[in-house]
Image (cartoon, rainbow, N blue to C red):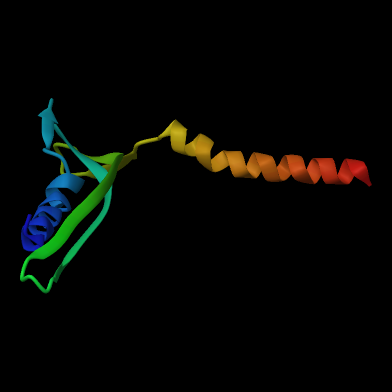
Length: 109
């Protein structure tokens, strides 16, 4: 694969269409879902003495929903965050471990 084609694929994958979903309208309210999208890519190659070339390219994407915009029939816009319990638990684990270590250290004294 040509590295330029791979970079073009990365650009297309990281477009605003991936961050904001298709609006959905029900009962006079329009909802626009939003996501966090992080990605990157790269590629390269080298010319060899026998005039052949070797190279490669690749990219990766991480995406998760973060919420949705609600647009009412009056034009009022409200943000509704998506609450991801998994991420909350992952973030809480180091805090709990630190508190347990602190508790055990004070009991030894």
